[in-house]
Image 1 (tube, one colour):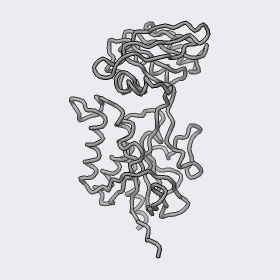
Image 2 (cartoon, helix red, strand yellow):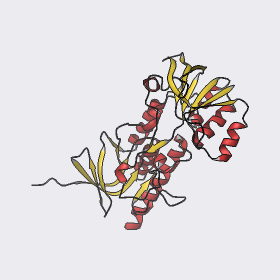
Image 3 (cartoon, one colour):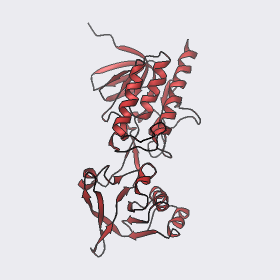
Image 4 (cartoon, one colour):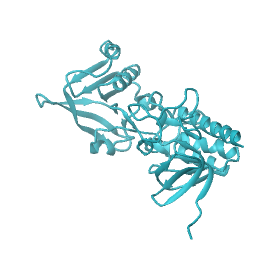
Length: 315
């Protein structure tokens, strides 16, 4: 005798600011949401030591603590939060079939995708060791902590150029490490970089090591090597920003939902609606521009409201 599949009104895939906010709104609307947390419960913020730019936390808070607050608030209204990884989806018909941990299948009337995006890293041990202690992948998130200090930015595209010029407004000096003899950034962004007086670009340079200790000390300097002459340069720095792009966590939805050339899910402008009625996307999985906790939370709210209206229209 086969076991009957579980049926839910709202299934939320992912548990960062977007997923938990969607859960708060869906639970308050009595939709009894189920959240599948994924491999990194709490999302990217769980790797962030200090969050100073989220409204309501006047003294700041650590990323993991903030995500625990989000989770507790969602659960207070009845959200069913579960460990697990969604391993397969079928959006061809409603109710949608969602497989968890390659064994359990849930039938969902609506699905909110909040799987986020992951920063691309250089793959160095020093990045992992000093992540949160001077190493960051988000200048707009963490730049304030380096006001009046020297920092290094790695990257050659528009994102790197934008982050470097942003940091130059508050840091005494910004050094960009570009591994080729030219930048990939647009001409307009390059013009902005080269016209920023406290911003220096070192072409043909790779990062050899990030020097410093975890804890209060943090990053102290960066050793860069010229990939043509092999000459090494030690750059004094309190911050090391990796700006080589992000990868949306959307592989699970290939062939199921439209996405752009980078893999970000495409939603109807001004909504969280994907091309498939009843499937919604919130947070960084559909946002390659802002990538902030507060904007993710906002789109999580939108997704829950869109799902609620969708279900009401089905009655």
